[in-house]
Structures are given as structure tokens and as C-alpha cells.
Length: 79
Image 1: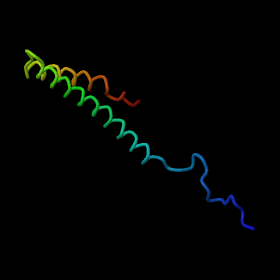
Image 2 (image 1 turned 120 degrees about the vertical axis):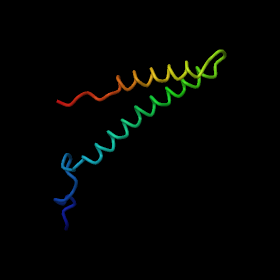
Image 3 (image 1 turned 90 degrees about the vertical axis):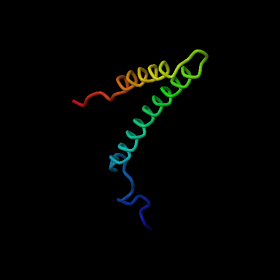
Image 4 (image 1 turned 90 degrees about the horizontal axis):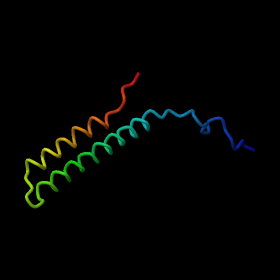
């Protein structure tokens, strides 16, 4: 009778996961900066179309939000 646990079965920690890790890292970067761009666009449109609003005020707020977001969402430097 054949052994149900052959030598080529999966062993925890033995698989190469570099592709999964790089895919997850890309997903996290796209999620962070996608959410930031949506927030900046929302600020732009809200301040532009509010009563007594202007495009310049909305663009300025969106620019400041993008600059601050990029500064704070950067990945830490690797050692």
C-alpha cells in the first residue's frame, strides 16, 4: 500500500514566496496612493464647487494634501 504522505508533499516554509511578496507590496503601494489621490480629488471638487469656492482654492488644498500624503506615506529607508 502506498504511503499517503509522500516526500514531495508541501512542507511549511519550503516554498519560494518572492512573487507573492512583490505582488502584495505592489497592491499596498497602489492602495495607499490610490486612496490619497481620491482624497485629493474629493478635496479639489468640494472646494471648487462649494458656494463662493474657486478652482484655485481647491487646487491649492489638493496640492497640499498630495504633498503631505506623499511625505507621510513614503516607505521607511531600508538599512
